[in-house]
Image (cartoon, rainbow, N blue to C red; front, side, top):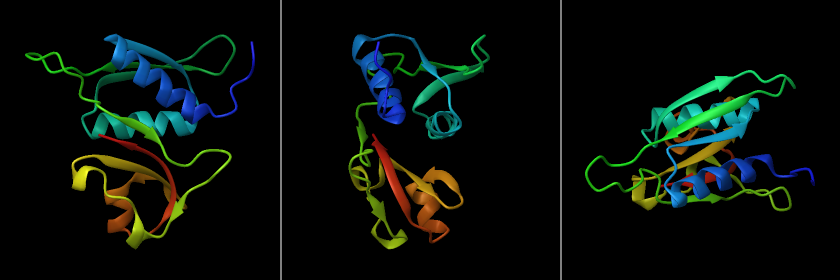
Length: 135
């Protein structure tokens, strides 16, 4: 088994694959950055619920309950895209942060004041690394 070098990319891929497969819950190895991204997804209404669990190896686990429309059964997350990759980092000043689906989606930005949505970063007038976009 090879070690994962892009843990955020792995996080996004696990969520994307679970949505495509129609799973209700997805388990992801925890890190502080992934926990914060999970909290943002919950706050913005993209996931139904989440839980941080401790594991014997000390890493921890994030259990994410995915959100689907009760009538149409369509997932709340239609697209997850990694923007800044380990081989090619993408940084943007506050006035050039990407608008996802003309404001209907969100971009997650890693700033000097923590990880936040593009809207929060624009409001605080701080730029940073564009981690991913979600819609």
